[in-house]
Length: 451
Image (cartoon, one colour):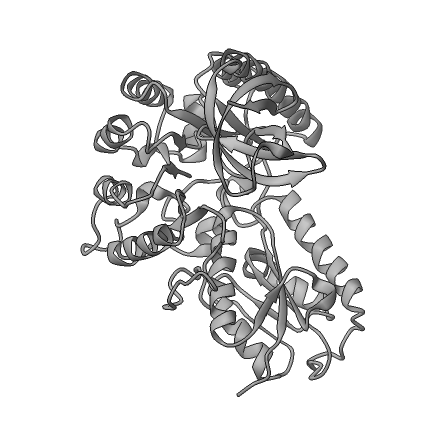
């Protein structure tokens, strides 16, 4: 039996990466290893990277270099892996996209594993081998086929991610995800519901349902059921309070799904649906399968049938060829107030994507100027919406302490990306739901007092 190792895992990027690492933690614990938070006390550090846009790549590289310094790693000789001492393992999208380059540039790393090779981490800990890279099969780590228990559950907290599928089959011209993660690969309905029921019995009350496109779930398998029926089954599980539907491509949204969201507003408070733009010509260049007319009709149906649904979206500014008029159309659309929360990004030219080959690239200065204008427009809308909530009493999930206060969020906020609610620390303990009155709002933060 290999000796037990202490492993510190650093996760970068999106909740899909977080889901990968939760499963890796389960696997490592099942193999007798210990997952620790402090990299300084670990026998090995795993860095699960993101490379969706240029800023994510830089963050990944900086994190690798920082971990290398922390571990005191001297660069190993080419092709040789240290068999003693602490190991540094890099996994995920950066490896899948830029493996050849980083393998040469980062000799202090023991192993590079692509998006489909996370299960090899335990083997590397237990069986020293020559320095290597494996990115043969892009994908994810969805079903490690391990029992979920309180000792190995993704979290002791009453909120968890519920992964439906891996990969993406949409042809968006700006996106590298299909190349990094492969085509859509759905989990079975049985596996998803088994995980949800087990976690619910262990105290999980909130699920964030995730995939590259949640609406694509099941389209690669005739044996898998439809998303509306799956969501109804999750909602029927005893103890489930909130279900957030994340990363829904608008082309995948159906009227039957809207019936589910509108029919149980208490269970389904939140929809994240990235639109990326509103101008029809830009959307066509992006290959988004929708135009302005279709998107406006969809939003009208959502507002009519699920008026209390919190809507989040994402937009890209500075896409190749985006004119000043097209950008102004996008800003005006945001000012109409359709969305409660919004993420915005300057277009990032990703190697190998159709959009990267276009000749009409926008300068970095123009992209950043447009991003600032759009962000200011959104903040005005979000501030006005927040002001209307002051004085209301809402249920708040308490998440972490900060000084003499405690931070939480309501049903309208997704974890780690939306506004927070700050209360006196004496309000209650982390992991509990309480009722509190919202009293003030400033800089993406509500203040509240227990009701």
